[in-house]
Image 1 (tube, rainbow, N blue to C red):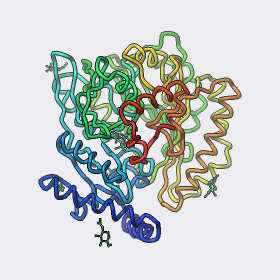
Image 2 (tube, rainbow, N blue to C red):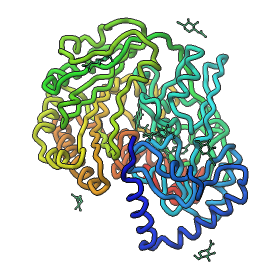
Image 3 (cartoon, rainbow, N blue to C red):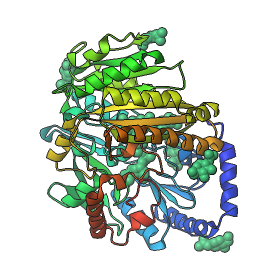
Image 4 (cartoon, rainbow, N blue to C red):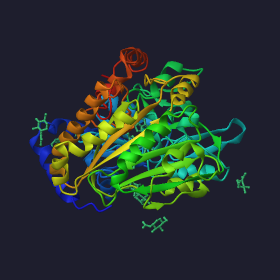
Amino acid sequence: MPRPGLQLAWLSLLFLNLVSGLAIARNDSAAACHELERIFQNFNVLSSEKNYTALSTENWSQTAWAKPSCIMQPRRVSDVQQVVRILTRRNIPFAIRSGGHMPSPLAANINNGVLIDMALFNSVNYDAANSEAKVGAGQRWGNVYDALDAYNVTVVGGRVLDVGVGGLILGCGLSYLSDLHGLACDNVVNFENKVVLADGSVVNANADSNSDLWWALKGGSNNFGIITSFTLSTYPIHDIWGGTKFYTLDQMPALFSAMAQYQTQSNKDPYANLIMQAFITDASIGAFINMVYLKPEVSPAAFSPFYSIPTVNDTTKLQTLTEFISGQIVPSVPRFDWFTTTLKPSVSLYSKIENVLNTAPELRTLTSLTAGAMALAIQPISARVGHVGHRRGGNALGLQATVQTWFTLDVAHYRAADDEAAHNATRGVLARIESETRRDGKYLPYQFMNDASFDQDVIGHYGAQNVRRLKNVQERYDPERVFQILVPGGFKLP
Ligand SMILES: Cc1cc2nc3c(=O)[nH]c(=O)nc-3n(C[C@H](O)[C@H](O)[C@H](O)COP(=O)(O)OP(=O)(O)OC[C@H]3O[C@@H](n4cnc5c(N)ncnc54)[C@H](O)[C@@H]3O)c2cc1C
Ligand SMILES: *[C@@H]1O[C@H](CO)[C@@H](O)[C@H](O)[C@H]1NC(C)=O
Ligand SMILES: *[C@@H]1O[C@H](CO)[C@@H](O)[C@H](O)[C@H]1NC(C)=O
Ligand SMILES: *[C@@H]1O[C@H](CO)[C@@H](O)[C@H](O)[C@H]1NC(C)=O
Ligand SMILES: *[C@@H]1O[C@H](CO)[C@@H](O)[C@H](O)[C@H]1NC(C)=O
Ligand SMILES: *[C@@H]1O[C@H](CO)[C@@H](O)[C@H](O)[C@H]1NC(C)=O
Ligand SMILES: CC(=O)N[C@H]1CO[C@H](CO)[C@@H](O)[C@@H]1O
């Protein structure tokens, strides 16, 4: 991806540092960085080397770039313990990053503070006897799948290979396997011996040991500690049928109607999974559905509502799951913002949403931005996802076990100067959709963290009871609220 805005962004960040009142904090964190450099002589503490530039501007969306005082790349759990103790003692703000794919500004990056980059926690170890894999938090899903493919097994993980393991699981993670086996977080057997708490101690979090923390981490993101690795359930996988079907935008009414039928069929087949994306402001891309059946069966009945809609291209075929995921299309626009809402699907609601997307005045604002474009994503979730989560020990999401759509609006654009306009306009379109949804009695309060914009109150939407329970867990494991106060980025407890 080209990074033309880089130098300009750096200059303006330096300028901001000089004029803001944060000079004192920068001075303190510089001192903490010197201490880290002294202690971790043999490890990576980057404040001036050339890799610093690459890492501070990693990664996916330029909206997530920042200028930390230094970047610490721990190699061992004891490094993480030590760095957390130093930062807590000195009261230095810090950020935690695994794969750097969350587009929210400063969710996994920081100005005037220390960035802890987990990239070197990249192990993948398969334990055939227990059908489990231990995966480092800083690993990326593509490498995880490659390693497990050798054994014909897989895990419930990301739908794009380059996304990080840590952030995706801690936001609960939606996978092509989720209708069958639940969310990524529901498949964490153990946050094993590797949750580094604010006082630098390490604990186990699983069904038997610190089970309240195990529950809280399933949706609790960076609010409780730093997770260095996850033990995940594995599942046999062989050939699958899948690919992408491409459509022109004038098929949207037919696609929405087929989608509602697909989602509400009785006993929806859990081996069938899909995501539909539609570039409603860009007819040259149109709409497409990534469709997968987790068995080697061509054109299974579960997708029959779609088969009569004419495609402009169709790449579905028998292949491995990893090959299918490698074919995902990821647009290369430098800046992203996206919003989430949850609804119960129906033909009539989808048609009202389609109408909003054809008429909302905010769309004119978006298309007037440099390279401004909006896409919607329909992510079908079956009732089974809630049931499986419950059966596997529960999570913090407050999800209803009912057929639902995790609906996303993604906006992409080119210039930092357009961030606010893009954000406001997209928020406006979302508000229109939510008001149609409420009017139809189809609104569900859940917000999916991994698709949320920075100012959506994700954890607040888990429900009052779950928020209380999360605060009790915080009281027990982080009474000084270090991860709430010193880790300001990302989705926090309300
Ligand atoms: C192209 C693309 C495709 C995507 N596809 C999917 C998908 O299929 N399914 C899905 O569910 N989501 C998907 N997402 C969303 C993605 O899951 C989130 O952006 C997620 O946060 C990325 O994980 P990461 O490790 O790369 O995140 P980061 O940006 O590194 O971190 C995200 C948040 O988690 C916290 N965090 C990260 N690691 C740790 C840790 N070890 N300990 C404590 N806190 C930590 C960070 O502090 C930060 O607040 C996708 C995103 C992109 C850009
Ligand atoms: C803070 O900055 C001043 C001058 O910029 C420097 O002399 C001092 O050593 C710094 N303090 C620390 C703790 O780094
Ligand atoms: C810098 O990056 C290169 C390539 O990614 C790597 O080989 C090298 O070890 C890194 N150096 C440091 C100090 O991290
Ligand atoms: C994986 O599956 C393929 C095809 O189904 C088979 O040829 C191969 O032997 C299997 N590998 C292992 C390690 O089981
Ligand atoms: C259709 O998909 C095939 C397979 O990926 C690709 O080779 C071809 O170029 C595509 N055709 C069009 C018109 O996009
Ligand atoms: C965005 O919305 C905020 C709050 O509603 C408003 O103060 C601001 O002026 C808006 N900015 C733009 C660029 O539209
Ligand atoms: C889009 C982008 O810049 N992706 C990069 C994120 O970082 C990883 C690891 O450094 C690269 O491999 C990606 O190309």
